[in-house]
Length: 297
Picture (cartoon, rainbow, N blue to C red):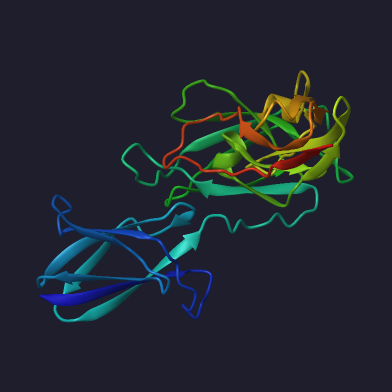
């Protein structure tokens, strides 16, 4: 038996000094057919296995990071192997102010990265001048490279219809945020990432009311209110609200305005939950929204 330590680090650090923690590591037989052991990297980015002398196939998983598809490890003595992971949230920015750079990976059903997948984006907005320059065409065609990676630019604050190969003729409405970069997956299948509040604490008298502004921010970076092809999207269409004690205060959300009605003296909490998600995700995304603390006098 030999002690084998695997060290995972952030590929953006050339010194290899930035560890990646909580990476789940699976060890298989050399042909990938037999599971041997698993573990998670610690605060130092390391995980250690005791293994018989042999060659193994090792895989690495952490949400938000991309590692090599598999690593072949030959165990001959106590040793350490260094493995780099790319932070998928570290998006490359567009180099032109009016553009948003889209980047990310596309996977197959077996978890493999898919090369040469085509994604088409048809510009729907009437904007034909962007940043003082004329837009010469209406369609952007992007193709994933040999590693299943996309990187291309779209106009900021514009509406597109997206068609992604392997999803048939399904058309996904895409609203490009006013940011220099966005993730490919979150652009097409966003979820509510956070709720921005005008205030997190309010005081209101019984039988009176007060209001708080609310904006829902999608994982793509787009924030409400924003205009779609047919209407304006407000926070009320993406999140729902609840009072922890309706005997103290009741609450309602209309467009981007939260109205709190005082009922009787006391305190309660107004919480938010997402009512919007375009795609199932695994592992399930866990998001905690800020709350409003209410005091009724």
